[in-house]
Length: 158
Image (tube, rainbow, N blue to C red; front, top):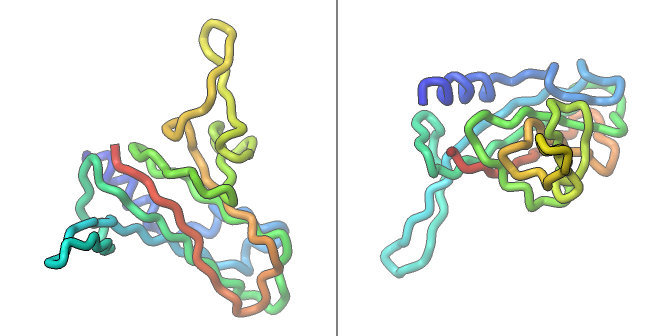
């Protein structure tokens, strides 16, 4: 658990170097936030979802990782790609078809359902969520000066 807290602290630090923006790293600011998603039943029997601080996390908790981006430059940015490493000890929810993932530290990218890994006996197997090392998003449009946005994914703490 102690290692998970250190990894959590590393994830929370905004690292512009982790972003991959075609020719414009210095023009894009990236900040990462993480929250624990709690689900409870209210007095009327309806499910309510709330976000709480991720100060204390435990196995089984669902977390939401949010990447806030902002074009701080004076020109539009095209082909904007933001990349984040996956927090160790988590299983990311990879149902979003717009998200590309890597299972080899960011060397190769694909949709999750297209990834296969070699097995020790010479065969191959489908990748599982625990194999994912990095997640990236490609914005479909240009990001104009001052424009900002939010990208996110959910994960479960193992």
